Image 1 (cartoon, rainbow, N blue to C red):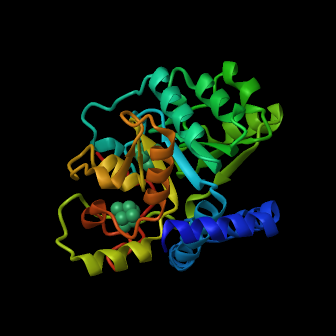
Image 2 (tube, helix red, strand yellow):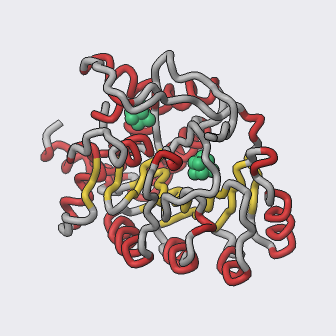
Image 3 (cartoon, rainbow, N blue to C red):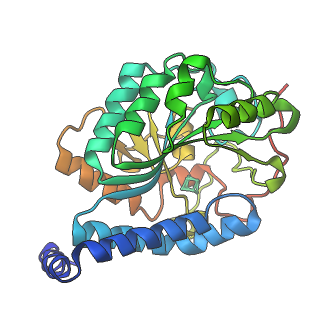
Length: 317
Ligand code: SF4
Ligand code: SF4
């Protein structure tokens, strides 16, 4: 549809129903995204079925109301991890020299992203293992202080108890710690939960019996054509964007795969390092969120019949 028509629809809709419709759309997107959230074969299929609606409602919000909404953004503060999961979705054990991103860079790109969008439903801080990161406090504070961020989550593998200097900031009702329960590997799972209960910190344990681990395969080129890629992408339905090293990627596979060999093409990310113009950034983020496939999909099995459940957190030797 041409820009002029969208603008006219925008003016009329805003005048007639304004804020109310916008809030309705936001609650529909939230409902769809929550319904379709990871974990389990059926959930993955459901997420894929709901994904086109998610994209459609995000499109209406932006084109009609000028409101740029992202449901879920992840910030991996470090590539370092103290576990070596063979099928880590971020491929952490395969980084020969894992990078610990500086607090200045992490804050710089967070601020730029927050300035660009109108709302982020869930902003997730993770690693590797985020509690290995020395300077986590200002990162958490920045996310909590931003009124555009509705919820902040920290995802940990349950090996490290959060240090005392973080307890106060973690008590914020907007924040939740999510412990990924990898059985015996998550050796401090119960200690973290006890601490959180005692200190009044929101905390959930996400169980390893949920069968939520799948194998997206290695990073070789699959040679799929455009039609196959679109079909795969539709069946994937990924809603987690990833802010990695100053670039916002459509998904973690694209973010980390490009560091390990997938070609890093400009169409697959938004460049928060080199673009400063807010309008340009907003359009680029909107377009990224509306993608119908990525080059990275040709280096991934998610959304195909080869994407099968695997044992949770199997460790490399
Ligand atoms: S604990 Fe998480 S980040 Fe670390 S290797 Fe396992 S899956 Fe990857
Ligand atoms: S690379 Fe494509 S198929 Fe794989 S997770 Fe990302 S969007 Fe989905």
